[in-house]
Structures are given as C-alpha cells and as structure tokens.
Length: 233
Ligand code: B1M
Image (tube, rainbow, N blue to C red):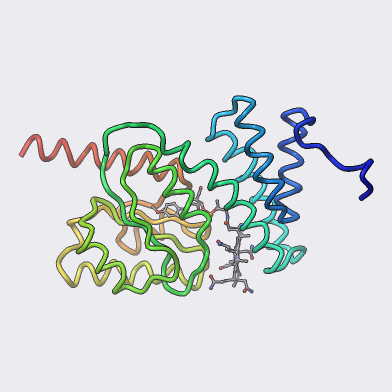
C-alpha cells in the first residue's frame, strides 16, 4: 500500500474503526490492534464494549475462516497474539471495580489443549466482577488441578477446552475429585466452544458456561447460594 493509501486509525469514525480492527485482527496486526483499542478507550468507550464489539467479534470472524480452511494455524496465531495485546490493555480496566472479593476461582485449560484466549477472557471478566482468579495456564494434567485446589482453596474450579478431543478430560478431573472425596467442596464450572449444557451435566460439572458473561453470572449465583447456606446453617 502506498503512503497516500495509508489508513490513519484515529481519523476513522467509531464504526469504521471497529470494522478496521476486525480486518487488522484478521491480518494479525498487533500494533494496530493496540492503537485501535486505545483510540476507542480515549473516545470514551467502555472497556467491555471494546472487548466484545472490536476484539471478540473480530476473533469470531477469524474462527469461521479457520474452520473453513481459509486461514491456517500460523495466521491464526498472529491473530491470537494481536487479540492478546488488546486484551492486555483492557485487563486492568475491567478489573478496576474495587468491589469486595466475591470469591476465588482456579481456572485452567485441560491437558492436550493450548487454546487460552477464551479462558483468559473468562479470568479477566471474573476479576472485573470482583473474583480473585488463579490462572493455571494451558495443557493442565489432573495432578495440576488437584494440587492447585489444595494449595489455593478456591470456591470455584473453572476448566476450559476448545477441542472435541480434549473436552472429555474434564471428566477425568471431576472423577479424580470424586475419588478423593473433595468433589462437593468446590463449584465446578466448564466452558469452551465445543461444549454444551448436556455435556456439562453428563461429566458431573455444576454448570456449563456459554461465554465469559455467563461464567460471571453463574459464578456469582453459586456464591450467593453458598453464602445463604452458611447464613442459614
Ligand atoms: Co484452534 N481449533 N486448533 N487454534 N482454534 C478451534 C478450537 C477449532 C474449532 C477451529 C475450527 O476448526 N473451526 C478447531 C477444533 C475442532 C474440534 O475440536 N472439533 C481447532 C483446531 C482443530 C486446532 C488444532 C488441532 C489445529 C491444528 O494444529 N491442525 C490446534 C490444536 C492445538 C492444541 O490445542 N493441542 C489448534 C491451534 C490453534 C492456535 C494455536 C492456532 C490458536 C490458539 C491460540 C491461543 O488460544 N493462544 C487457535 C485458535 C485461535 C482457534 C479458534 C480460531 C479461536 C478460538 C478462540 O480463541 N475463540 C477456534 C475456532 C472457534 O472457536 N470458533 C479454534 C475466541 C474465544 C473468545 O472464544 O475460546 O470459545 P472461546 O471462549 C469463550 C467461550 O467458549 C467460553 O467463554 C469464552 C469467552 O466468551 N469459555 C469458557 C471458554 N472457556 C471457558 C471456561 C469457563 C467458562 C467459559 O470456565 C468457567
């Protein structure tokens, strides 16, 4: 592209900028995503709106073309990195609620699975809603989950899986918790694109969460119920 054609992000209208950010995310342009994210914030956009309308929607488009064989792993990795750079700017802003801690969650992506954008988003939104979040990262074997539960004593265990081949591993973790007699000490929430409610029920989770907003709602509802139980005991 010649200099004359260069797009000045700051000169675009909000709608055009969001559209351009979808394109830039598609092209894996990290610096442009950082700049676009900052411009929308400077224009008074709520961090949550930047996240959902510019970044998550952009990643949805990337996901469709990955599915259809138009984009390949290296390209999607660049998109993911650009998305993460935008999320890094939004994370502290989403967490800035100053609300008293609602509860504690340990979250991680299961063994064999390296997808972490959705998990990171859930963690960010949970922090923003007032939860303390301990992130175990990706590719977690059952032992890592069990150690973290013992060490961190959270209220909630969150597990993420994006592959149909890795989602059954969530049951391995829950079965191990049952075997150790600790299953009912925790609320177990699961999520990831290939899961559904029926799967959540079948593996013995407390709930399946369709997205990060549902994860926050569900976690908050369980914490409220727990507190009521304690008050009435
Ligand atoms: Co992968 N990948 N990928 N990938 N990848 C998918 C998942 C896939 C659906 C693409 C496709 O074909 N359409 C497909 C899985 C197919 C299947 O299993 N049936 C797939 C494949 C096949 C693969 C590889 C096997 C490709 C290969 O190597 N040939 C490989 C697997 C590697 C491995 O894990 N062992 C692979 C690799 C990769 C990249 C490394 C390139 C990259 C990951 C980078 C990263 O995460 N750091 C990548 C990406 C980016 C995707 C897609 C395009 C996008 C995923 C994403 O970030 N979505 C994805 C396509 C898709 O999902 N449509 C795809 C955005 C994110 C915000 O949404 O993760 O769904 P999501 O999270 C949501 C909810 O699901 C929910 O809340 C989140 C926020 O709203 N949620 C939870 C998620 N976790 C939760 C936990 C909770 C609660 C809610 O706990 C309480």
